[in-house]
Image (cartoon, rainbow, N blue to C red):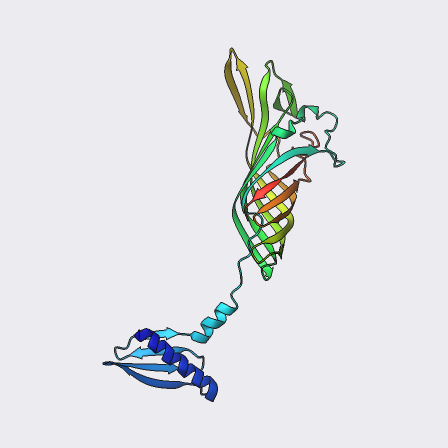
Length: 280
């Protein structure tokens, strides 16, 4: 109760200063056996000093101004979890494999990409409607092949070595650590929290792992072979991304203008992914 009385007295004193144009003022207040000195300087900072020399500071005008101009946080479209279907296109931007790359034919429905984007930072440029987004995430690409073969490195590049077994599964798995740089545009609809979100930019990736996994059955027993290698895959890659969504759900598309394998070390195929993302 005493504190409320002191703050009320300080506010009345500050109001009086605004009316009469005084630069500083000092008032003494007694509450019971305690004496309080209220000092207001030209910066509108209020100091309340007790007879025990303890000081309480309140900058009323500065606090109100800070609350009035507080900027809203802008949520980007990167953070969260995404899943998509991945495939290859050729240099003519067609979903078709070039000559000599038939062994890379995919079971598209089983060729999936998973993204766990665990870090995001969005900088608002025009309030919280236009901004720049970056962050970090883990990407897992799973290419499921229709043919039975083993990826083998030779001096001339990657080749498909035949196998003497019927594979129930044959896949190439690749892990990347990704960092994006995207421009974000957000349009409020039905209130500030419901927004149409548009984003586009680039993604840079560092390959942190790759392996081929083969599954087969012998005498009714399931067997599995894991081959860890770089397979002449690129250590670093980059791609273009575009996203559109509403609230916390977005559709995304990624296109990589670099070949999956290093130059002249494998077929001229370019990865693409279309999927859905939850978060942001």
